[in-house]
Length: 377
Ligand code: GLA
Image 1 (spheres, rainbow, N blue to C red):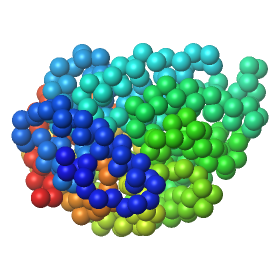
Image 2 (tube, rainbow, N blue to C red):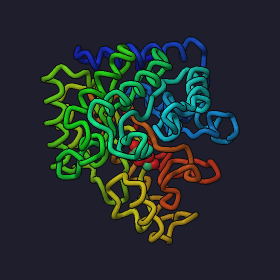
Image 3 (cartoon, protein in one colour):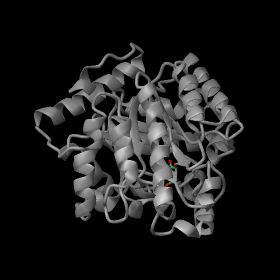
């Protein structure tokens, strides 16, 4: 497959990613995985793999409609929830691996590049993680040990199978400073370096991503670039950057996306769009973060587009997808994966915003055709 053979820069991150993606996609090619055109992954086979976030029903084979969309269109999967701390490690001595095992099996059976999401994050992480048995804040050493054990257990279990991990998620504020998360408050700034070191120790072959939203804002991007450069100077194994890509009808503009990718490409690490969707709801037009609570509030305000998109909004959505994919294709030397955050609008965390390429009935929207058209040839 072309994806497996195109040349990549010779940084370690690129090399690891090259090996991971080519192995997975080459196997898929040999196994003769077929799909009826037009399919996203075929349209983009000369550009970058296309991924999708999947939920548990989809991995368990309980969503037949989703299943055929996923298999026909996507090269890669990310778990929407099952590998977040609160699900995979709900209590101190309890790991819940049934869902993640099913997820990984689904990816392997379909010869997909399997992504792990996410190890160290301030959200969807139970409160006990940061407390001792008396409910008092843990000290630095105890929290580091807990982080180490979690990463070792979860990454170690899927060593060599999950090829790409979101190691640290959303460590930055929008002004580019470090978020005052419990990780930062208890451990200090080096919690980020430690997380990457532990992940590398658990699976030296995995691509290790720093993942964040709104890197299209200059101040936040500046902070991200400074952070990654500092980690690189310390020899910390951060080997890819994830731009979440939660967008709306007005933001980011193609110019803002282009500037973000141009600047971040200067880090010489593979860039991956990790959670793309475009919110069409009225409330969602003010949404430039991925904060789950803020999203729910704004979605509730945007009642105009609850179930059906008007023809005009369908067209607006299509042209937004088209222009942003155009930017990704322009930068295909740097962009190594583009993942949509959900299969159909019915599956989306921003369901009210009808943000995806397939509608609630699993039918491709005009935006789907626009994305197919935007592929580089
Ligand atoms: C962030 C997280 C994702 C997801 C979205 C909202 O972007 O990285 O896992 O929770 O928020 O669903």
